[in-house]
Image (cartoon, rainbow, N blue to C red; front, side):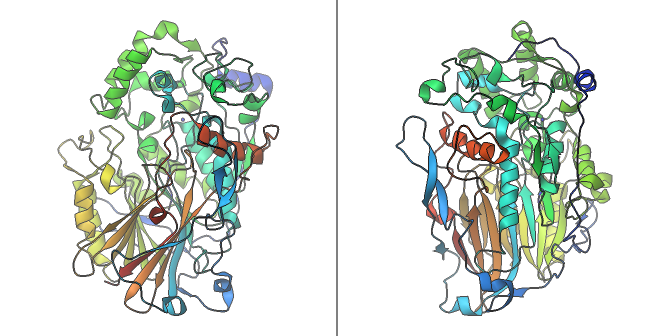
Length: 594
């Protein structure tokens, strides 16, 4: 269910000129059409109910667990965090190396219903899918990036940011390797990505994301095609300078010198693409420049994004003041950002202009998903359709299986800020969809969580429309007994929340950690009927296919993916609570039937 919509001082050449001069060739490849769903998902206009007829699995029916067929594999742990988890091999200080650690056990959660004995022998699988979230594919050389805020907050820039594409490809390889769903063995129906697929709302990143998901060759570089021009080649001690002998701030913490790292980081990579149909949900980093500015059509920021200047350093006091404007949302359209950039024009360094760094609009995001070059295993549009383009929306429904409907929401606030909300038109559409599909179980997908939908800036395109927060969405979902789960991301932390309501109208909210910050996870979710008046949702976390241990001399695609994980563990200032508790990881969530 994913969706989509991106130093050395050198002369400010044009990337197109450089590509022509060096004879560089851009290659892209779509991967086959196997496992294409029978029909596409459909969007609803603000005045029309959705047509929920997309089948995410060719057979479309329920799969019964038993001694024969795919279910004979269940339960299994290999390739999941039930079997093993990347774990530091040393104490909490210094640069820590990763290795194989003990897996996380499955925990049964009974806050919403009591588990009944014998259910494992009775249960029937209704659906199984994989959730990816917060991939944050980063054009690490993009001129609009805020790396210089590291002067006041070490976590404002992360040493692993040049390797996001290699890490995401390795995650795709892991999903492709799964032999059905871990708890039931039923075939996996689809993959859903719940937003922040890109990081800078950059066209470069959008192209990389679509190729990662559907297959193709990707060169994770922008600007000068010959070499990297970002902060990690700046000779600034603020940032890890992997190739240089300079004793920067991160090397003082134990980070290694890895000669050839930057050359390897911008080398062409190949993604096999998912073997499963995939869907897309939009996040704030996909919809807004830097994930926080409601500045669509802002000519100044657009010109800066594609231009030849980049700010790489800023004093800590000024960085602190500016960071507060982002956190408190006091400058949602980016006026404070304009002022900051204009005030520091003389300190900027020259980089190679690149028109592909331009921000993309919501319509361009949808059109990119509809591009046949990125159809991969389907469906066409990955949830989006021409109806979304006509209505100017990014929410839709799709049929997961005969008994289960998927609803993908757009919780980004076009008015600005990184927290979310939805407009009245979408809220009414959601209510109508739930009511008109009362005979189907419903799983809702969004980027933001119920706790992070507190932003009610007006939508510039609909200035009089009211915005609605997470509490109102929870209240609406709890009115309908067919709502089973709300699956989301955004916080980069595993958290599973029970939402209790009377009359068997309770549901689970499942928030999954990102794939950019350690521990870099995705989640398999299985829905089963226990045939005893209860349902179970199994959640199983997975890591990328990269080995847990790293080798600093291995700069292959797989070696970079392993290093991506280890660098994220060691990123200065990074949070240590993102894996959540045992009750937020591998679980069986019991629920009464509505």
